[in-house]
Amino acid sequence: MSDVIILAIETSCDETAVSIVKNGHQVLSNVVNSQIESHKRFGGVVPEVASRHHVENITIVIDQAIIASGLTWDDIDAVAVTEGPGLIGALLVGINAAKALALAHNKPLIPVHHIAGHVYANHIEERLTFPILALVVSGGHTELVVMKDHLDFEIIGQTRDDAVGEAYDKVARTIQLPYPGGPHIDRLAAIGEDNLNLPRPILEGYDFSFSGLKSAVINTLHNKNQKGETYRKEDVAASFQASVIDVLTEKTFKALDTYNINQLLICGGVAANKGLREKMTTLCAEKGIKLMIPPFELCTDNAAMIGAAAYYQYLNQQFTGMDLNGRSNIAL
Ligand code: KG4
Ligand code: ZN
Image 1: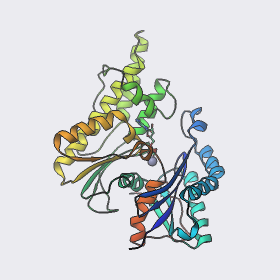
Image 2 (image 1 turned 120 degrees about the vertical axis):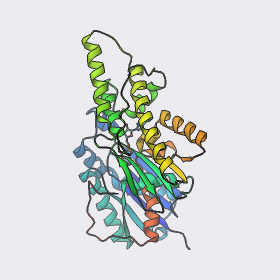
Image 3 (image 1 turned 180 degrees about the vertical axis):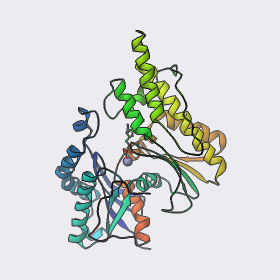
Image 4 (image 1 turned 45 degrees about the vertical axis):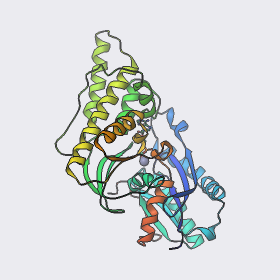
C-alpha cells in the first residue's frame, strides 16, 4: 500500500498543536505551542483565554509544522482533528482550521477522539500488539480500556469523580505549587516521605475515585494547621503520590489478572509521572508483562498522537463532512 500522510490538529485544551505523521507512526513534524504561562496566574486553564490563544496561534503552528516536515499540500493525504472531548471553544478553533484546510486542498477530514489519540501516542515508537490494556491518566480522564484491535475501545473502569491529573493539580494548589501541579508534585515526591497515612480509595470492580483522596489531603493539612503542627510539602507530595500509584497499580494488575492481555500501555499527561513510570516498570518486569509508556513529550497533549490514531480511521475511510462540530463530552 502507498504511504499515507496526515496533517493532524489538536486544540482541545491549552496546547495548540499540529503534526504531520506518515503511516500512523513516522512523525515528520510535531509542533506544540503551550499556553501554560498564560493560564498559570489563574491557577488553571481559563477556557475563554485558551480559545483566544488558539485563534492567535493556529495558522502559525500549521505553517511551522508544514515547513518543518519539508512537505507541500500535494504530499498530504488527509486532515485530522480532535473532535472532543475538551473545551468547546478550544476544540472549535482546531475544527474550523481543519475544515478550511480540507476544503481548500480537497482532502478528506478525519475526526479523532482525544483519548484515542493518547492511546496511539504509544504507537509511535513501537507498534501496538493486541489485546491491550490501556491505563489512561490525564487531566480530564482516568480510564482502564481493553482493546482487541485497532480503534476498538472497551472501557472497563473509570473515575466516578475527579480525574487523576485533576486531583494532582488541586492538591498542588493546596500546597501553593504552580499550575499544572502534576510535574511539581512528582519532583517533590521523589525527595519526600510517605508519612501522612492517606487512604487508598479502592472501589469495587475497576472504577476509581480520587476526590476523597484530595479531600483527605486538604483535611489532614487543615488539622495540622489548627494544631499548630508543621509539615513539609515534599511529604505531602510523596504521600499523595504514593496513594495514587498504589490505587492505579492495584486496579491495573487486577485487570491484567482477569483479562487476556498481551501488552499494558499507559498514556495521558500523568503517564509522564516518574514515580508511576518506575513502579509500573518494576511490577511489569516482575510479572513478565510487556509495558509501553510514551516518551515524555508524547504523554501530554500533542497532535502526533492524533495523526497516529487518524491513520487507522483513514484506512477504514472514517471521514466526516463539513458539518463536523466540536463535542465536549463525546464517548470513546
Ligand atoms: O493529557 P494532558 O496533557 O491533558 C489532558 O488531556 O487532560 O494531561 C494534563 C495533566 C495535568 O493534570 C498535569 O498536572 C498532569 O497531566 N501531569 C502530571 C505530570 N505531568 C503532567 N501529573 C503527574 N506527574 C507528572 N509528571
Ligand atoms: Zn490530553
